[in-house]
Amino acid sequence: MSLKIHGWIGLGVIGVAEVLLFKEIPVVKTFFTPIVWSGYILFIDSLLFRNRGASWLMNRRKEFLLLLFLSIGFWLIFEFYNLFIQNWHYRGLPDEIVWRWFGYAWAFATIWPAILLTAEVLVDWRFLQRLKTKPWPILRIHRAFLLVLGAFCLLVPFLVSPKTATYLAAPVWLGFIFFLEPLNYGWGGRSLLRDLEKGEPRILYGLLLSGIICGFLWEFWNYWAGARWIYTVPLVGKVRIFEMPVLGYLGFPAFALECYVMVEFVKNIFRRSS
Image (cartoon, rainbow, N blue to C red; front, top):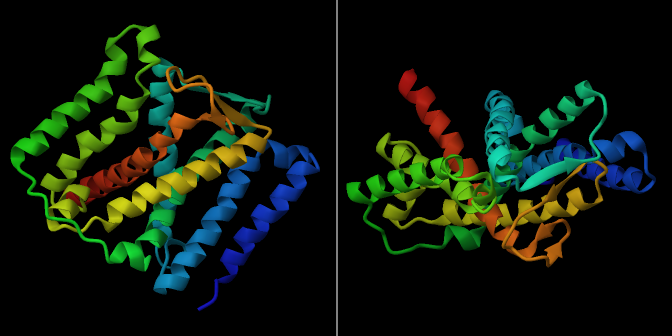
């Protein structure tokens, strides 16, 4: 089965955007990041449809639309944390406030779909489907420990001095995993802990690989964009690949897990409320 038309459109969007960027077309230079990620999402969704005969854009459009809004809301949570940890800031943004916030919303809306769609494509990889691990018994004490650890990670940036908070990026990128996973497990929803309990780690591995792939592409495309982010992360060294310090790339696989866990948490809330 070949790619659907929206997959080819997505590849075309990426290619044309790259050409227009290097021709320094102002609107493309400013909105380059959300443009190419929109193209990427179209392509990866078409790839998913080719593999499964079903995809978000072809069969789950309402869920996809909701995910766009969730992606904006979720990323604003991390922007709130960044007010305290001060690990990144933006340059080259439009002067007009309306266009600036339009760019924010468009860019933020692509984050969760990119991560989760890529992970779904990777999960279908035969190599990952064959992987099994020894089942891990998940006891109540394990879940309680993770819940407390997660709460600590999410609260500690607010409890220390501003100077100390800049060193606390790692707790932020891990805290939601530790805090929400035990809740997802306890509520009977999809859970990475339950997958490990069954000895089926392919979703976990798919997410980790998705974080690596999307993380590299984020930094690659961001490096050339007119409106982009700059890092001010202490303790990770000055050796960089594009704008990101090398050790900072370790955060992307964890972030992919957070994306999955946060979405499943919201799904559980909807399911329990209905």
